[in-house]
Image 1 (cartoon, rainbow, N blue to C red):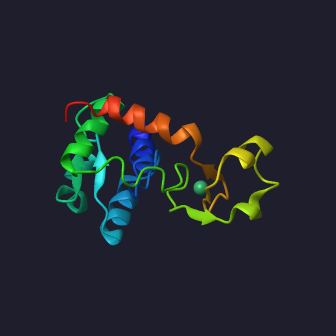
Image 2: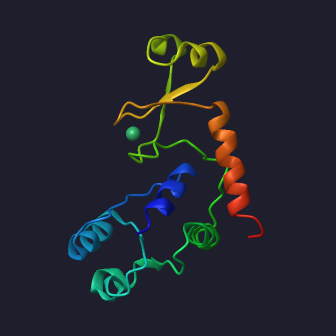
Image 3: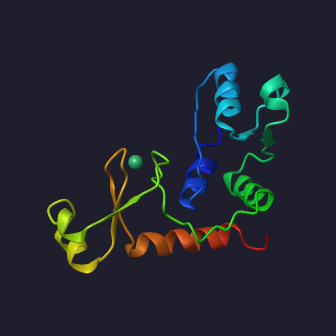
Length: 146
Ligand SMILES: [Zn+2]
């Protein structure tokens, strides 16, 4: 339900765990023991004892509105930590030595890019390129006026 919000929060560098299908009890327990805040639209979930004082209720169906609400509420700086985390795994990215990835990225990318990062979990390789610019533009558009 909040998958796109989770993805965009990770793009901004926020530490976000995401579960699309997890029993309420387990979710409540995980958040409680790890000191995380539950972002949810589930009105039943927020009545649970361990969730009652540990959640942020997301109002809108639209992920853009959800993002605006979260950024405002948590005073997130959308740009300083942008793309520092794996969008898939939520792991902080690690800088790679350029020489070490020569055979792992397309030749054109290797020639034109200087900084490469990897996710320690899925091993996906990230590079700046137009990717970052596009994300910044999209964020600027979505967050305009808040
Ligand atoms: Zn990853």
